Image (tube, rainbow, N blue to C red; front, side, top):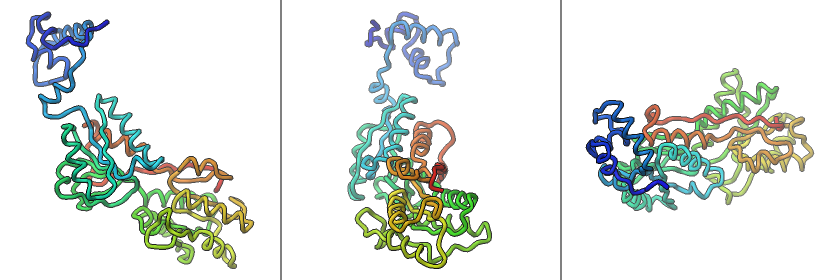
Length: 338
């Protein structure tokens, strides 16, 4: 059984070289020059003896540990948003790094959470949010946070990875047009950045075809200034009204899959068939909803896994550097509702 306590000094003594040379060969320090034969002998003996790097000691010497810190604003409480952390964790592990996550409930705790993570001497710290939003970090935390994940820095100073909301809306509207739909209603998410950007994309897709959307069919899915589970739903009233007039939409784009679920229920209650009478499309691809509706829902999948993988690439120092704001594209999931 390999001896886990073999040290750099042990290997150095056996080969008659310095511990610094052994460290350079095993830890990839390009500043230490040596013959390739020497490097190969050191690696071979380390493998034979079962040398295990003391990452803690190495981290103490270098002033950083093989750790990435994440300040998570509600991210770990949302079933589909956790895909960001899952993909991130899987990716950084391939680089020999570990992830330490601290959850924050309100902005007043962000500074303390960043300070707590700094005690671990992480290689980098990122801030991640459960949905696309603008975040105003406290001044004391700004210098420590290297990357914003699924959110934007209010000052535009910190690199940010966000979903390409406008592009996604253009893509799904074009898909509806390409499938023969001509009159599209939009039940949007009020008060959310995603809703604003998706409406921009909705309008842009119409404009690109020389069309103007029916303004009376662009409506909020809930009452109040902000979409939330607690807000009163307006879906039933809106769908019923739009389909009771002489001019009716032949497609309804929903702000997310939960809104689409309500639209399905309303259409069934008033005797409209999906997709024969009205097509329904959406955003998010919450599989527990979208794939189980009847018929299954066509939707734009949030790029959570891609965001997690790209964040890992940036923070591990691999691949290209982050842009100021980097938009990650959604993926169209075609099902039977269109």
